[in-house]
Image (cartoon, rainbow, N blue to C red; front, side, top):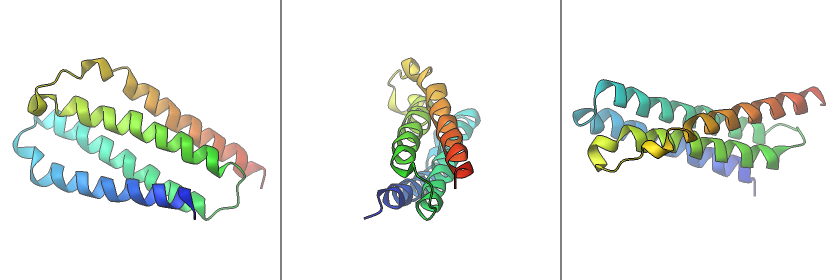
Length: 122
């Protein structure tokens, strides 16, 4: 069982579902800025889900590390954006998550650095 491919497929699927919800339902309730933020979370989830699928077919050494790092990065980055951008709907103050988003972005960057380093070893 290829966990990297499964997680990548799950994140890609979830990004399509959330993107459709944003395009067809959330646009009625969110400001333009909040909708753009939500869509950014969707895009990054898709990009990294597809990257996980592609990496699963490579022969680099640190696939398990990349699975963990990209998964954590997606959750911290995209899901914090989803919660922050939908505060007006949920009426829950998620502002404490503001610092989490850049940590998630940094985690994704670290994942790419690990990918590049390991690709140089092939």
